[in-house]
Length: 214
Image 1 (cartoon, rainbow, N blue to C red):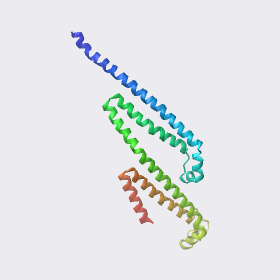
Image 2 (cartoon, rainbow, N blue to C red):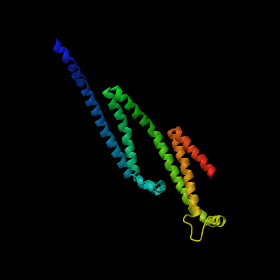
Image 3 (cartoon, one colour):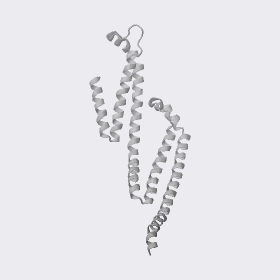
Image 4 (spheres, one colour):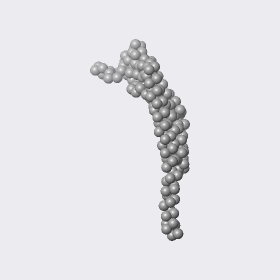
């Protein structure tokens, strides 16, 4: 009887391990299958977009040059598809383990991440569009203003040229300022989409100060 009382905790330990192993195997198998599906979906998405020459089409529109992007849009979208599939699978795999102290916080974190992806994508699109517009306006001003005599007029009024030539012409400076203004507005809009109040207030202050400075 006394030996049985001593061996009781050991029996409980092995019983707990024996009950947990099937859950661990089921969770691992679920995640493995989900990973394969996500990998296949990623490769299929990337291959399809590359066959459609999405990167070349985007480059021809001038978006790649305007935004300064050097990556592949097809691969980026393929990675996004992979994440959108693997994260829910990971949540399901964690729930199978039934370790609430670990699975509940991790599941909540992953749920929050999945819910944040649409906002993150929207903010990235807004920021990319603002960079595209900013660079377009900047290049337009740098090409258009000199034809109006802007550089010579500013030089005559403010006597900027000391005879050795300006390192940066007034038209280029105006283009840079226009790009910076549009970029700040775009970043502010992207931050508002993300819902970060502290950053929104910070960029709001930057916009206000920029208006006063102008």
